[in-house]
Amino acid sequence: MKRLTLSILLFLHLSIVSAQKFTIKDIPLYWSDFNQGKQSNGSYTATTYTSINKNYARLRDGDENILYLNLHLFINRGASSVDNNFLNAAQPGDKDALLNHEKCHLIISLFYFKKMKDSIGNQHFSVRYKIEIDSIVHYFFNQIDLTNITYDADTNHGLSTNRQLIWSNH
Image: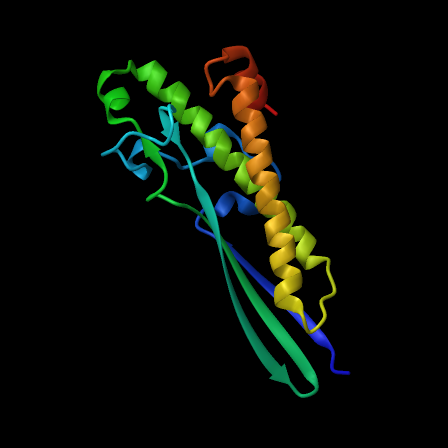
């Protein structure tokens, strides 16, 4: 049976993915990253969506198969939105507070993306590597969703200043 070697290339537009801890100041997220022409989904003032792209390349080196995996976490600007009325009417401090709340959503995504990267890097894959990797990616993407739901509930979507501060410093 031929050995399958996995070489992982993990890319992120943000260089902070390799950092051990992310803070609000590290996150280059601005209102211009959001779709501003429409109401956000549901009754929320702003929503931040992230997505993960996967690309595989498999090369042979003698008897060894080498798999290159490119995972890319990005902000889905088409799905991320902010209520244009809020941007036009809110005080600067309120805008900053909501943007910081949205940055924490991105920090949650980055945290789990790093855990996913580490998990994939520590696995030994079979010839069913795509199914195995998809399963890991799916697991961590669910963790991102569950943590974001908990975060929004705990902070009342950023309105609970004390709880928001705890999450921001966590």
